[in-house]
Length: 287
Image (cartoon, rainbow, N blue to C red; front, side):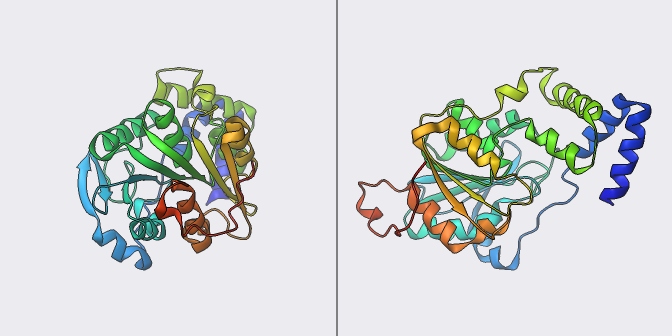
């Protein structure tokens, strides 16, 4: 199917790059599939308190103290954080998450990074300020932008994340073998379709220098987000950024890996807190 779509868009792009860009945009913005709750996530999923906030399905666990926000990625859902949620609850945190519009159990159409900012802000007003924010994949730029715009958090854990906003268009075109003309038209469609024609979004929504302690986790075999994106995050956060490289997990299995979960949650803990006495050894905090 991908090959057929690729050949079709390439052919149309030769005749009309503008039409090719418009068709590419319609494909780019559609998840095409919804993530379903997996059997090993069901117990955690069922234990959540479910609410509708800003027209999306939201979930929260725990007693409300020490809330931690979890932001999922493209074609994903909140339940993918089941292992994180279990560990956070064991340590006295209160996980908070949501199914993005057109994802999981939430209705509606896909929203832009500004829509996610609005949702995250609403969750902060209801549950925050957050002890920490954990995000995966496309959830990383959504979370970082929300924090940059004022959402309160103490520490950040970014897993397999996109740092360069233009990467979203460039990688899509590369995967389908689409040339620079369609890429340019796709970018224009994204600017017009979601941002009122603002051509500065590629800089505006890319990661910038941050003031919070940040743990970057990426895998050397990530087949979705190039590990080089982790280096962009690290460079921008400078001495506040810490790196946890992993191997052999790919883009998705990294979220359920016990060692990743343990060390990511340990990073959120206040180093001066008594509750941090069981932090595992071996966390590489060298930038």
